[in-house]
Length: 315
Image 1 (cartoon, rainbow, N blue to C red):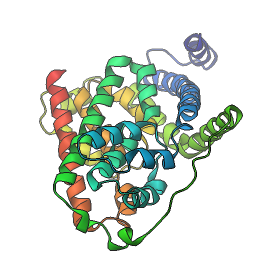
Image 2: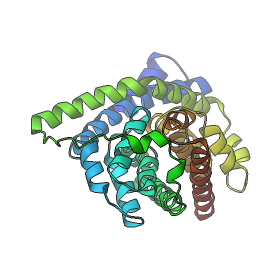
Image 3: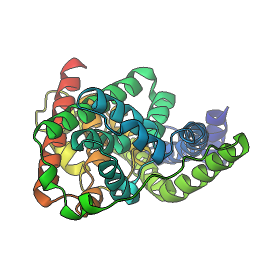
Image 4: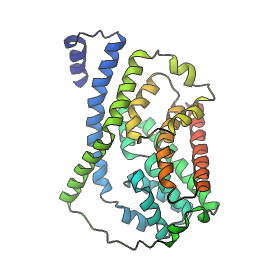
C-alpha cells in the first residue's frame, strides 16, 4: 500500500518518469525514508523493552568471574542485548575490570555490543530476510568470540592504562522495573536513538537514492563484485573512518547489494564501521595503551577480512 502511494505521488503528482534516473532516486528516497524510520521505531521499542531486563549492572554480575571460552561466548551473546555506545565504552570497561571480568572476555563484549547491533539485525531481517540477518549475526559473534579469546590468551593486562586497576566502583543495586517503567524506558530509548541517528540515516538514504538512480548497474560489480581480491580490504579501509552505528548504514547496504556488491564485502564494510570506527578508538585510548589498541585493531580487522573473504567464497 505504501509503495502504491509513493508510486502515485512521485510518478503522477510530481510528474517524474518511472524509467528516469531522477524518478527512481526520488521514489527510493521517499519510500525508504518512511519505511526505515517506521521499522526502526518499532524495532527499537521492542528491543529496548527486552533490554530493560539486562541493565549494565546485571550484565557485569553475569560476567564476573567468567573464564575463557564459555565466558567469551556469554559475553558476546550479552553484548547483543546490552545498551552500548561510544560514550559508555570507558565506564563499562572500567566496571568490568573492577568486577573481575577477564580482559579477553571484556573484549568479546566490547566487540560484539556495537558490531552485532540488535536493531540492525532486526532491520536486516525486515528488509532482506533471515538468511542475511543470520549471516551477519553468526559472522559478528564469531569475530567477537575469537578476538576475545586471542586477546585473553596473550595476557595483556599490563597494556591497560594503569589507573583502571586502581578504581573501585563498588556494587550498585539492581532495581527491578515495573511494566509501566519498562514501557517508558523503551519509548525514551526510541526517542533518544532516533534523535541521534536520524541525520545519518537521511544522509545514507540520500546517498543510496542517488546511487539507485544514477550509478550504473554494473559499476559496483566491476570494482567490488565477486572475484576482486582487493574489494574486502578496501571496504574495511573505507569503513573505519566513518562514524555511524549499524542501523545508520542499512540504506547503503541495501543499495550495495542491489548493485551487485558481494555479500562478504558488504558485511566487512558494516563490521568495520561499527567495530573499528576511528571515534571509538579515540575514546578507548582513555583506558587502553596505544599498543593494545593497535593489536585490537589488527586482530578484529583480520577477523573481519576473513569473514568477508569467506562469505564471498560461499556466496
